[in-house]
Structures are given as C-alpha cells and as structure tokens.
Length: 121
Length: 111
Image (tube, each protein chain N blue to C red):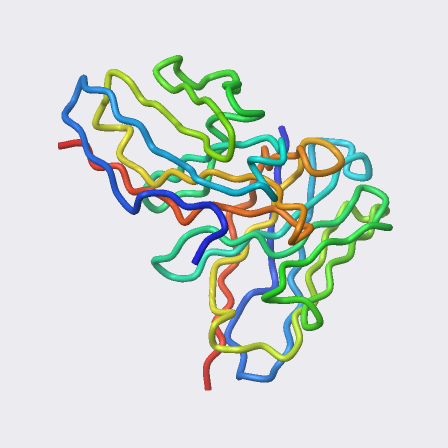
C-alpha cells in the first residue's frame, strides 16, 4: 500500500525556519517525482514545489522561490522541504504527494495526511 | 488569483447533472498540457478524480467525466448524489511559470 507520512509542522515566528519531512512507502521511491502542495485555512490548493526522482531537477512556485528548498534522500525514502524566512501567509496545511510520471504531464496520485504550519508571533 | 479559473460554487439537486469549468490560457491548457481533476471531501485529503484530461482511476464512478478543448476544460457529474458534495480542483502545468498550477476550486452543493 502506497503511503506518505508528513512530519515537522508546528508554530514558528515570522522570519523563522522549519523543515518538513515526508516518508514514502509502498512504492519505488527513487523512481517517482515528489511534490509539496499547501492549503491555507479555508482556501484552495496551491502547488509550491516538486523534485524529480533522482533529485537533480527541482521546481518552485514564485511565492516560495528563494525561501524554500526541496530535497530528497532516496536511501531513506524521504522527501524534505526546508522553509526559511517564513511569513504569516505561509500558514497552511502542507501535503506531500507522489507524482505519477516525470515531467509536466504528471498528476499527483497519492497524498499524505498533511502537516500544519502556523506562522505567528 | 489562480492561473486556472473555476467558478467558486455550483449546485444541483440529487439526480441532476452539473458541470464545472476550468479556464486557462495558451501557457497551460492551451499549450496542450494535460488537465487533471481532484475531489476534496469535507475535512479530507484531496483525491485524484480524473487524470490526463478524461481518465478515471479505478474506483471512480462513471458518473464523473471530463473533457478539454482549447484553453478550457470541464468536469461533469451526472446523477448527483449527496456524497458528491465536495470541493473540486482542476490542475495542469504552466510553461511560463515552469510549474504546476491549480484552479481556485469549486464548491459543489447538493440541494
């Protein structure tokens, strides 16, 4: 059974940092791209970052570029999102999801339960 | 303001058919990138509903269908049921942003 389990969310002050983790299981982790999607309270889905199966190619939404860094450790079947210089508008539930294929035609077929990040003083 | 535009809400009575539009541009849907649809039931994680424009994953009823034309796509739900009440999102890729994009979401209310 394919599963993703996020961790690392919590309360952080504006300007602070946080690292999210997402452990994948039930599939060949290094074969698939992975992505992060967030959802602010009461709002819609926002794609924020993706990474290829090898980890060599990364993508970012403009809203997080330069502040967030996506990475993966295929030896640990784990995806990461390092979030720096956090702002109030980064408050959201952060989901990791498995991508179905390489490149632009991919969709996100399995999602984790999400981890809540709250940025507030 | 989302790159893909969806109506904020639609509604229909049980048994009726509703459609949800997703309007993009020449840098995403109009450029030929596939459109996918997700269903998010209240308090739950999004779930893939339609992939690659018009394909249903196993387990998704054939009451759900989708199409794509030009710079737009649409999701149709026939034989509405109370359990269909959810938020629906379209998703594609945008080559000017070099990233994936979602529509703003549409809340379906079953009257």
